[in-house]
Image (cartoon, rainbow, N blue to C red; front, side, top):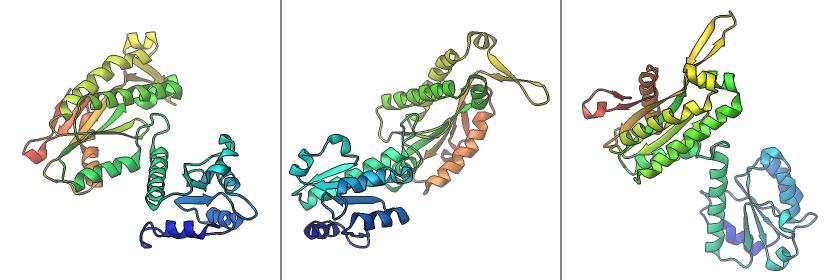
Length: 308
């Protein structure tokens, strides 16, 4: 970075114990360091000796394993007006002159967008594991009462084996939309929907709203999913396959199992504790051959309850 004033401004935005800044005046030296020890964010000035800022970022983006690094280009209006927009492969632009507040805000927003994009499930675009963990911990820290529901499909692998991953993805997209729409229709706070991966989903609602949402998800899923089967399989109500010994195996129409854990009066202090309990409750739900949800009400002096 040639602009010493800009470098000083950036380094003054946060305490040194929160952000570790490393400054380079040469693009080649910077790239060598980035490739050997990838940072969370790269801020590149337009004018650098030997190689300009846009070329530094182009070389960085050309490497697949470094494309996820948040990249910010700092430039002036004159430079940008002569630069084709197709050359701007960056997450954020800072146009000089810029105030300290603007620099800070653009950095925070760029890093947040990059984090969300990387965490999102590539099929459903729902938040992934990092966002799920952060959301749960945020609700726990605020001592908010909430219900966390884990939903997954029963007999999804045989369905993929029979019809292929493309149709399996269509089912997952359908399920993601059903869950997201029904959760949104509750108009509740807190609320959240995430995609753990594969056929595993998570949603969060207030304890008094979760059962209604579970009922609607189960009913809507059961009404829609038969349409993803070929007519003959739909008429039979199952698909058939054979194992390596030549024995016929029969798998019913896809169903959904939902395990719900209530965190009331700060019963749980960590996401991992809730996830463990949900895993135990899900075993109860999966014991059924039909779409089912199970709500763990034991903290209210009641036993775990199941509803179809």
